[in-house]
Length: 197
Image (cartoon, rainbow, N blue to C red; front, top):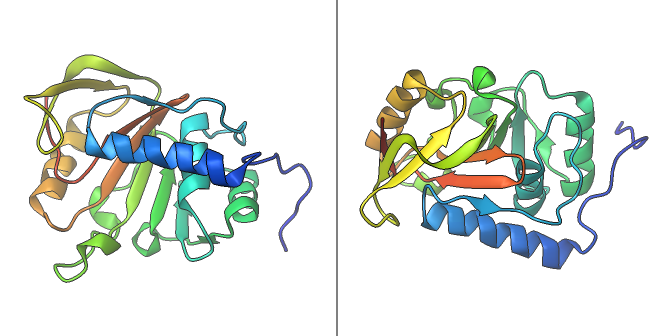
């Protein structure tokens, strides 16, 4: 049974507000490394950043399988199940979408569904919450959607993540797509983006 006690509101106007956030997400994937601000979004459950919460509200529905990292409480699961109808799964490899509370809780990228050569679009989309996002950081990004190169800093993600991301990009057309979220900011990292520091 889903306990409805204490579940906070979602979008006031589900159609218009979810479309606005969806456009922010698309812009982030189309222009990797750019920071997309999600404004006037619902207050998230504890442990979830506003941008990550808004993106999940816009993307999830009853046909989606969601994996949550270990520290995210039952209240987060209840909130997202109530507002989206999504199905929660216990293993990263079974998920269409994943929310990772912090870089320390990010499992190996290879543990998520990377799709197949026949159906690369069936791969997982992973949202990783970080302490801070800023342009002009030490990471150099290049690839489709980036003129020349972009710069980015994502607090808490280091050399191990970059090594995993290199393997993820090498699996193209398979591989996961990723969003970084910090506060009200989103940054898209599609599998085609190359990163070096």
